[in-house]
Image (tube, rainbow, N blue to C red; front, side, top):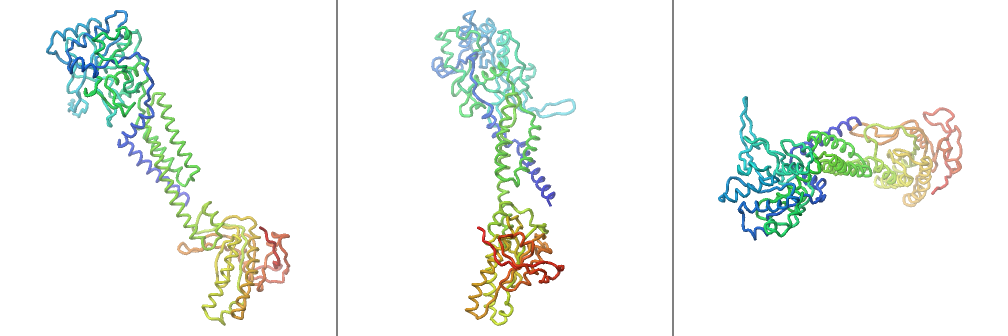
Length: 603
């Protein structure tokens, strides 16, 4: 049976783990997992001031007019930033698309001249993605990220400057967590991201070797943000450059980024570092540049491995939680959930990204479900124990039995050393013949109530009623201290209590009865004995038979005990040995019978 239960529990654990792993793999929880990962992984670290954002902000719009501006404005800003040959920026990034010649050839020429003269400018380009059927020699497939159009700086500008794409690629929940390291443009080749192009120019200006680019599956890499929105912007407007209100040497050796920085320009995004405040595209580029500079490029662990680990942890957790008491399951749940979060943090610092949500969520769900299941099973077991023992076991023993749980209430028994008591009413048959049936029932109920109260008061297990005979035992189903004394105390209480009942019967009916009691101690089989559809919790064996023989021979108002009982009672009892004068059926010659005359009351 235990093997069957273990197999069933294992099957349930595997099924539950498989269902949760499938749910994780389905992507339905990706948005929630992304939010949890953002909260754990993404934190503001603070910038070192090497990157400066100059905004095409609201003040500039008010002073210079609405976009698009003449290209000469940006050309003037480039010239001003480079006006001091000894204090030029390391690189200037212009997050504006200058596609095709404008209506002002002079402004175009001015911009080309400024870019060519200083050689430290990177301009933006952008791809338009869509779905396209790609044909090969043998087959065809649908490319859902095909480059359908490419917007780059006009030819003259592209010839004298660098470019990088500015495509913002948000996750399925609309949050920017990843950047696109490169784009393969048909007829052009591989174009790096705007941020990577700027970073590599910055390294060239400093005479440093660029860090290796992050591992990028399909070009995507995870972006560890350095700053929150507005973290790179100190309120410097492009209008300040054009008016000369800020000294150009403040940008010496730095990375200067110029781009849209006003509401309504449709260039703000929700990012992993702050879901509440949108971040402008130019600051996302700044964060990517800082990530390259730091050389910290964490990447997602293989999803198949993570799902396999999730499956094993869920199955093991449920196997552990089922049938586990709260004092063990609660710490286990906390350790497993908190431990997973700690592991996520440690591995993130080592460059590996794990799903944050799945293990704590599913372990918590399994914990809650197992608590509910354990409660239902405990209540069912409690009712089963109460149904089995409730009518014939002392409430104190019942409480212990429920707290400990019954090992098994199935058909079968165990060997116990028990104290067995039999009590019978002497003279009852004669009385019943002289009285009407309702009176007989009333009398027997009085006596059986008395015997039951005496048994329960002394923490015994009421086995059965057989006519006017009562059987009880001690030291099963739970071990009891001084079981023999408790049995004998119950016997003496019965004899004493029968006197008051006998006097009442004499007064009412002119007849009386008394008890004959037998107590023995020894091994017996105790358990559910019978057939699967009709079982009785009882005790069987020679010890039980001997107690019954002692009771059968005991005169009214007398308690017969065996030598083993008398020895166990010791000086607490006064006994009289009858030697072998009482012949018990089925017992060999020389079996000693004693009467229990007095018994000390022990509190």
